Length: 449
Ligand code: GAP
Image (cartoon, rainbow, N blue to C red; front, side, top):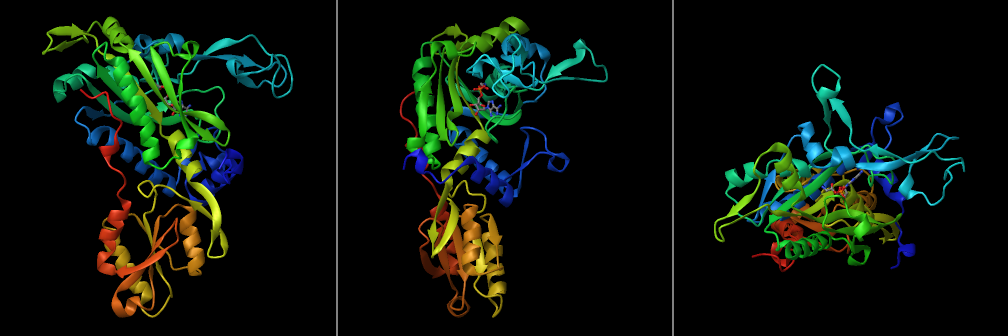
C-alpha cells in the first residue's frame, strides 16, 4: 500500500487519542498550553509498555549495559562543558507585521509564511529552559532544565565504571524527561517542549567506534520492526557533513514515514571522545580509562543511540491504525503489537444474566494476576468487540451459554477475528504463549567482541 492509500491521517489519530484516553492537551480546561500533552489512562499504559520494552531489550537482557536515573537539574558548568550554553541554539526571525516567530533555517522564502510581512534579521535563540535554584533570582543561581539525558550519563561515567565493574566496551542507558524551548513545536507529540528520551551512551575503544556505530544502527533499526513497525515505512538516513551536531563524528537518523512526511524517530551518533574530554577539561577530573589487557590508557569514544518516547509512541499508533469491515460493520482497529497494547485481554459475558457476569468477573480476577484486563458487559457483543479493537486490545474472551455447562470460553483474535473455544484452565497459558514476541535472539549481528 503506498502512503496515499493509508487510512490514517493525523486528525484521525489525534481524535482517537482524545476520545479514548490516550493523550489530552495539557491544562485543557484553561485553553491548553501549546505543545504540552498529558497521557491518559491508555496512553500511559502504552508509553510504559514502550519504555519497558526498550529497557528490557537495551539493558536487562544484555551483559554490556547498565541503567541510570540522573537528576534533571545539574551543575550549570555541565552545560558549558557540553557546548549547550554556547551552541544549543536555533536561528530565530520575527515577522514585523504579525509578530509570529519562525526558525530561519526552516523558511523557504524571505517573507513571513503567514502574512507575507517583512522578517527581522536572524538571531541565535538558545533552546535551554532556564530557572533559578534557591530563593535568589540572579545569574549565580541560574540552572537549566536538561535538554538531553545524555549529560547525566557522561558526568557519571567514572562512578558507574568503578561501582559496576564494567569493562569497555559497555554502555549506560537512561530514560527521562528533557526540555527544549523549541521555536516551532508541532505535529502533536512529534515536537514538544517537554518530552521523554531513551538514551544509550556506549563507551568503546577509539578505533572500534565505526564497528560499534554500525552495530547500533542495525540493532536499533531492527528494534522498531521487532515491535511491529512496517519496514517500508522505516529508513536509516545518514547525515550529511553540514548537518552534524557540534559533537558528532558521524550520525544516522532512523526515520518513519508519518502522514506529514519522513521524520526522525531516533538519532544514532558517533560522539567520538568529545563529551568525556570536555568534562575532564572543565572539571579537572581524569576521565580516561585504563585497559588492563593492553596496558593502554585512553579516553573512550561514545556511540549514542538516542530516541524520544513520544515520537516512537506516535509512530506505533500511526502504523497500527487501520480501518476495515468486521462482521459486516466498519471498524477502526489498532493493530498494535500485543506486547505494546495497553490492555491485553477483554472479558465479555454474552448475556447480562444466567450467571454469566459472575463467571466472567471470576475469570477477570484470575487473568488480572498476569495481564492488564478490561471487563465490559454494556451493549451488543459486536459493539463491545469494536470498542476493544479501536484501542488495540489483541484478545477477547467471551463467556456464553456453553461456558455455564462445560467451563469453556471463546478466545477472539483482534486481527484475524477468529475465535477458538478452550477450557478456562488453559486461558492463562494460551495468552502467555500468544503474548510472547521474538526474543533477543534476532539481535543485529556484529560489533560484539
Ligand atoms: N543526546 C542526543 C540528542 O538529544 P537529538 O537528536 O537532539 O539528540 C534525540 O534528540 C531524540 O529525542 C530525537 O530523535 C527525538 O526522538 C527526541 N526529541 C528531540 N527533540 C524533541 C522534541 N522537541 N520533542 C519530542 N521529541 C524530541
